[in-house]
Length: 360
Image (cartoon, rainbow, N blue to C red; front, side):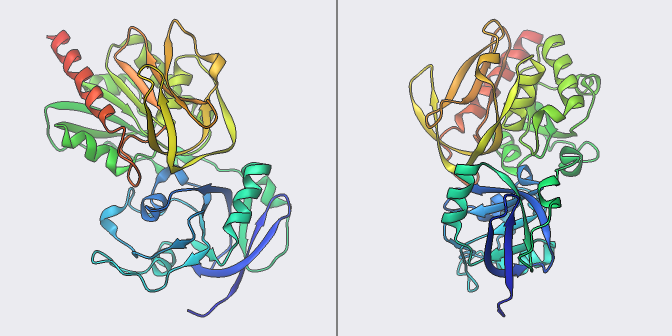
């Protein structure tokens, strides 16, 4: 592969030199880092990364090539990719191609040869910020002015996708869902219908689901006024069991009247410790988020904290009182990443069973 110089320019003026791969075009986005040591395909196709430039802290990326069966979405959602060492000769019996070719086909530029350790330390100390992958080292003010727009509209399905049959009817609000959430539910006998992000509360209720899942997704949760209003009506006016994951956790919290805030550099990776405050047990979890529920905004008469992040004490999960409803900030489907908390899907199925029995 012929080496062409490329640059990552941050909004604070830091410029890092590397080499181009993938699509040959400039791109601007929010620069974030993930500490996951594997699962780069799941990361790239995770719609929660919409509008972002992903930095992998693990040095060697691309070593097992491209494996479509591992995708969490149909295409790459990130707008750019930053790695230290790019593998150009992948080796895996499931490999269907090279990472460089995949990014080129998807129209996503990448940059390799970057000192990702320096970049990560910079983002940890200065905070997440915008950046641009460019072929000239020139800084322009519009880098700082860039904003992610219409995130959910651009990642959600446009119309409902029917479920495949099962014992429980699940309505999943698509804020940018990962395929493995649907797989985990289907393995437990659920028929999962995917609904657009802005589906009205009335239409969700009219589908007579046994449970509602609020999926993961990108962007600032407080920007999603329509989904929040819809979930507010479903939460306060129905008794349908609900399970919020990542962005879904935040939208559910906002619907309940709590607030959210942005973290300095977010939690992204497959090694984030989350402690169950009820049992005292700590689980390793996969996470990808830049916002959390503000701790002192949680009304104790409505919900109680169930999980906290061991590193910084932020809220990782809520259990709602007098409701068959709970939510987590991390990814219990853990793909790629640890599967320690997949039991939460069993808890959700149990709540749906109780709800169905009460309805009879």
